[in-house]
Structure formats: structure tokens, C-alpha cells
Length: 115
Length: 112
Image (cartoon, rainbow over all chains, first blue to last red; front, side, top):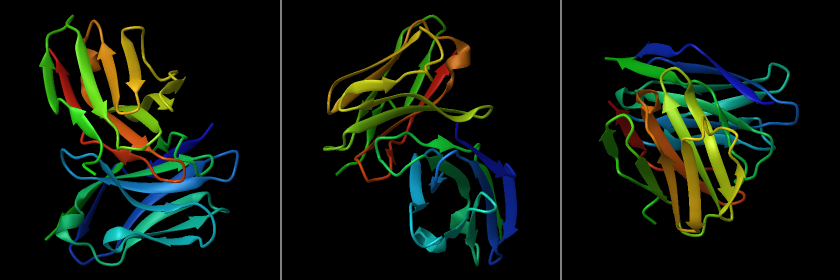
């Protein structure tokens, strides 16, 4: 069975500071990994995804994540936080990259950005 | 495309009443997923369909919950009778093979 653990339900950073949101996964087969963002009263929007190939994945809004198999991690980073980054972020895993397979989500991390 | 469309956006109902949530997936997508989001449990998969056929409904919490997909452009999630513990945000998502899941804006259900 797959699972995702997001360390820290709430992260607070200053505007301009580094954003680091942590995600560890468990999967019995090579995983495919995703980060989604949810703004208040909105649905989930894909930030980035790892399927195969390059382990450093770049996404929208300046975010990137690195797949580290040895650490079973897929942490999300952004060099400089903006106020508009305040939202909830979800890490998700699936067994193989097929849109027909449901994702397993972590509990989410709420990011606050302080002016 | 307008994206995944869910209705209503908000629903307040009394305990014991029937509730029907609706979803229109993105045209051409062949998979549809229903998720429930709560503070305590996060995002949970309730049921998903491939090509209008239910594949896995093991996440449906009780017999009070049922879902249908009569055609490729419409799905419903019904709760009958509703209970206060069903209060949550219900999301519908759709996808194609080789694409990520696209989410609707959700239905916030409050059962009083």
C-alpha cells in the first residue's frame, strides 16, 4: 500500500525567504509523485510532477522538487516566498503514471507568508 | 474547456435528508474520481470510475453513500440519509490516461 507523510501541518516563512515543504512516501513499486496547491475555497491545482527521468522537477510559480529514492523523499522548494504563495500544499503518490489510477494524498501543509 | 464543474458549491441540509452532489468532468476525460476532504482525515478517495464503470468503491464510508456515472459527461454522489459527520468538502476530479487529475472547485456540505 502506498502512503505519503508531510512533515509539518503548518509552515510559516517571511516574504523573500526560502520555502521548504517536506514529503516522504512509501511505495512498493517505483513511485510517481505530485505536488498540488489549494488556494482558499478552490480545488487542487497541479504544481509539478515526477514520473521518470530527471529527478529535479520544475513546476509553476517558481517551485521545484527533487526525487530522492534513497531517502524516499520529494520535498518542495522555492528560493524566495511571495505573499501569493500562501496556500495549502499536498504531496501525492501513485504506483505508475496513468491518469486512470487514483492518487494517494498526504494530509497537507498550510504555508503562511509573513510580510 | 471550463474544467471540472461541480454543483452545488455549497449545500446546507438537515440530518436525515437526501443530498445529491453533481459533477461534470472535462470533455474527453475517461476517468472520474470522488474525494472527500476533512480536517481530521485530509483527502480521501471515495470511489473512481474508468470509462463510466466503477472500479473501486472501497472508500465509500457506508451504504448511505452511492455514486453513479450514467454517461461520460455526468456523475452524481448521493448521501441518504445524511448525518452531521458527513459534513466535508467533496471534490470531483477527472483525467485521461497520461494526464494528471484535474479537480473541480468542490462542494462544501454542511449537515445540521
